[in-house]
Image 1: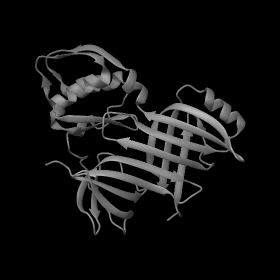
Image 2: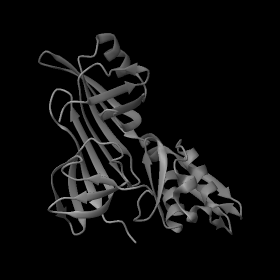
Image 3: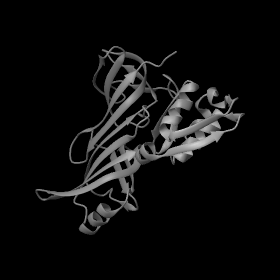
Length: 265
C-alpha cells in the first residue's frame, strides 16, 4: 500500500517536505531519548549550508497515511552532507529531549506538603520538558511529600527516583513528559491490529512474554498505547514498549516495528 502516503519534515524554520526522504525513528518507554535519522535528498546548496551551521535546530517529522501522524520531535544532534552519485544527501540525526536528559542538573528542596505532581513538574521544567499527561497519569501523583524532599544531581536520575517511589515510570515523547504506572498503558481504547487493519506479516513471540509485530504507519502506534492483536499466531491485548518507524519515499518501506508486552494487572 503506497497510495495516500504523506510526509512532512521541518528543521528549524525550513520545511523540506517537497523532497524525497528516508527515515528511521526509534521511540521507547524507557527513560532515554528517542532517536531519529532522516536523510533528505537534493536539498539546495544555501539550505545545506544553513543547516550544517545551525546549533541544535528543532527537527519534526510526520509521516504515514493521510493524515500523517507526528513520529518525532526533538533537537538535531548532527547534520552532515555528502554526495552519493548524482544526489546530495543531507543526513540529520536527532534526539527527543536528549540534551536535557543528559545535561540538566537539579539542586533544590521541596517543602513538607509538596505534592509529588508539583515536584515532578518542577524537575520536568528543569529539563525543559512540558508536563505532558502529568495531571491524568495516576492518583499516585497527587500524593504529598510529608517530610519534603531534597534533590541534587542529574535531573533525569532524580526524576526516576521520585517516580519510582510512587510506582511510576517516565519517558519523553515529542518533547514532553509521559508518566505511566509501572507496567501499565495509557488509558485509551486499544488500537486494533489485524491483517485487515494494517498488520503486516505474522507477529512472533520472543524472550518470554515479548511479542514482535509489524504494521503500516498508522496513527497512535506510540509507546504506552495498547494494541489488540488479532492474527493466527498471536491474539490478545498488549502495550507498545518500543517502536521503530521506517520509511523511504522512493521505495515501498513504510512500517512500524513494534515491541509489545502484556499490560500488568
